[in-house]
Image 1 (cartoon, rainbow, N blue to C red):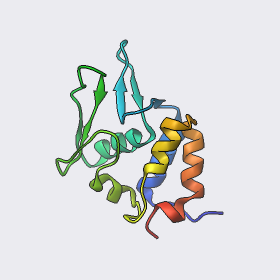
Image 2: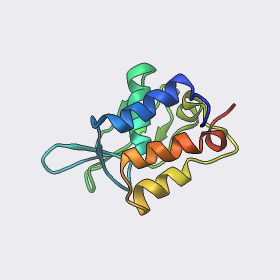
Image 3: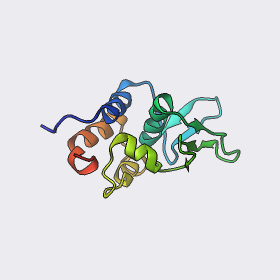
Image 4: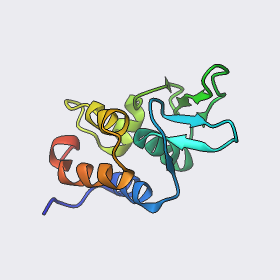
Length: 128
């Protein structure tokens, strides 16, 4: 059984499993024509970071309704996590969250499956 995740990473997994976020692909966050927000698994992490640390979404890209995220260090990210959010989650700087993007965007798996992957591979993804 994997060891216990740090508090912020555990909140992220809980949020992925909560059903509170609708999954989208190919951007951290996208707004649909009817105003619904769709999140990548990394976008969920950005939203939690925003609630706890600060930062902001948007404005939406007028062409694709994609929203970028600006963290509390004023770094803007569109498809991956900023260094500040990676540190907040406790990601190992020698590993990339790219595998999670692949799962979310290319493999088209559920948030539950992504949370399970993160939990199972936490030793490779996070600092000890």
